[in-house]
Amino acid sequence: METKVLYTGVRLSNMPESYIRPESERPKLSEVEDCEDVPVIDLGRDEREHIVQQIGYACKNYGFFQVTNHGVNTKAVEEMLGIANEFFSLPVEEKLKLYSDDPSRTMRLSTSFNVNKETVHNWRDYLRLHCHPLEKYVPEWPSNPTSFKDIVSNYCKEVRKLGFRLQELIAESLGLQKDHITTALGDQGQHMAVNFYPPCPEPELTYGLPGHTDPNALTILLQDLQVAGLQVLKNGKWLAVKPRPNAFVINIGDQLQALSNGLYKSVWHRAVVNTDKARISVASFLCPSDDAMISAPKELCANGAPAVYRDYTYAEYYKKFWSRNLDQEHCLELFKN
Ligand code: OGA
Ligand code: NI
Image 1 (cartoon, helix red, strand yellow):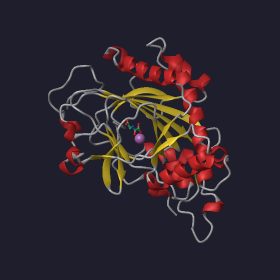
Image 2: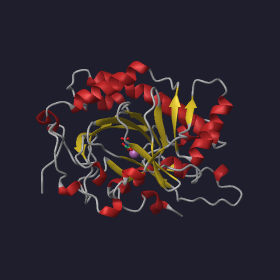
Image 3: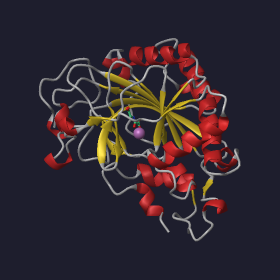
């Protein structure tokens, strides 16, 4: 077997065997159309009722949306993308010092998705960080580049505020008290995946990330403006989500699907790669605290709508999730009543 552990900056001219998907699982890029009607929600508007209604519509019908005027400082966003670029441009010897394929590590640079569980690898390197509480985790973050810790912790703080604001709007859109979600999820964890998708000799044969849903509550994705790659599943078809200036892509994760009693869908999405350009994305995940009990509120189980999922703690879910690989049956299915 070849040894592509991390991208070295040397472009491969041939696809290594272990990245090639069987024919039936390939991305079929020529069939993918642009998603022309991605809901774009302007959080800067005054009319809260209107925003709540738009969010409810997007969560129910798409499971994802974009937000603009979201309050996250433009400079914080630009610096985050800049430092992500710098980090992945470090010499591979430097990056290898941080390499680990153990998902239980709270800081690690890794590749693909779960290299020890999967049969086919993915064309991605990623830095995974725990980000809450910052005081606990920042000391173990990379100190090269030197401004990494400052820039990333600043970005994390801003994104966290946005996440809570969105959870309040989402709770209201479900007809719940505005603090229902933020209370139910306890002292939420925050994780970050800084994704780097190297140029790939044969994008038709592989994925950056294959179709998956996110196992957490809410994801705030910052996409490289220059290079597209995110696709979402809508009505059985994969659609490309073009990067939009000054916007984040927000997606509902498995925990909000469960908490909304299945009303809101944790959207299936994937990342595809391209031949010419490396792509960067930064995913921030808000995660319930380990002991948060995930349970559909009684308001959503009234009128003959039984609870779709059994109650479980997030710790139980997370353990199950990482014990599997992305190609298996959806993890949430295992928690159905
Ligand atoms: C993820 C993810 C998509 C992207 O990190 O979970 O879905 O475009 N990323 O990188
Ligand atoms: Ni994802």
